Image (tube, rainbow, N blue to C red; front, side, top):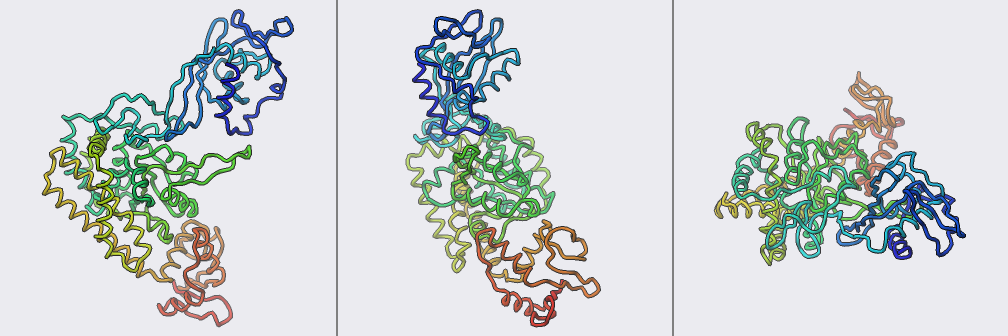
Length: 577
């Protein structure tokens, strides 16, 4: 038993933190053939014919759990019991913790300072293994929800198969390492509620805002459970969906309602003010689900961090990190489908704009529909299980999805000719359309709409998609070097990374000074080299080159009548503001 469990545990312990290093007394050699005995709850070690006091307690391993993720074993959890003469305490710890100095901490947390270890941790571990016997019950848990290797969809409380929905699956889902992810949980479909829920979504949810917002949002929600499958099917990056609009326009409200399709979230979601590592670590547990990150502000969120998050989300990989023990930790990224909100957004990074569906949310609100949606949000998570099962019940559903997306790419290709960046949206937009089409098919199955209405709404979606692509192409065509300059400077002024001395409403004591304001002349004296350095640093931070030269920018400013004195004259250029 000693050799076997030590071997199994050691295989799971591939990495330890600096504070996990075992105590020096563990280096003591226990020798072969040692035995341990328990008397009145005390643990003794038999050594050279004598009983040596080891601890005033003893431990036993009652059960063990293999922790799996996407079918791969990632670790082992041990359920122990600490026995004393008059009491017992449960202890749960990982195999890594069992083999490290954390074992002492766990004992102290469970039993308090009254639990005294007189010998070494090494002897305590060996004694625990010997006293536990050779047949320790073993079960498995998974830290990944979503599609399984056999083509079913696993949630915390159900397994959705092509033949139906199993209420209590054999595989337990453990999302305890996450935070908000512990709120994920789909409801079992109730036939008496589903048709009314479908009608409510059609009449109220889709009318919270205009169809330019609600149709793609509903498509994003319906597509989220199939995130891992669509990546395998199409080999293309995932598209994030960003709701942009003024404060108080209802963006967060839409995000909360969307998240309630996947569990009980309400005000439980992540903010862009969190660190990049925190956002990605939490998003790791939202596999094949919607993942909501709220309130993007350029002055708060670091551009390079946001760029990294969005690129990793699209590409399906994370950044490896070096731990304190010189080992590489497992890279984590957002495994779900990202839904974001904010007053503004990253707009000059091609790898992001081509993989983000940007929806501008109008401030007008449908208060009556919003009230009904809020009242019914608790049953929203009943809708998707039926939709997923409807899809899985069709043997050729993957072929249908592939054919649908290919056809829509062809249908929309004329809108992106000559705009390579917009072509990225051409790859991701049809996937969103697929999600909306699955939503319509589910409404047809529920008897909420007929085939004629479904076709009509699909045509309406196509109009929305074409307008979206046309707007993107128009913005790409119209944005000059001057508008790029003012947009970037505006963001950096708001963030406080640069400043202009004397500029009204500006925090002049923060950031690098790039110019001096002349209120009496309504002008700003700009230092050209510092200005170009600021712009170059911005594009370098997002992995791109400055798209124009100093002379090209000066000429563009002069052409628009925004520059008063050319740089050929000594002193800084003066740009009108």
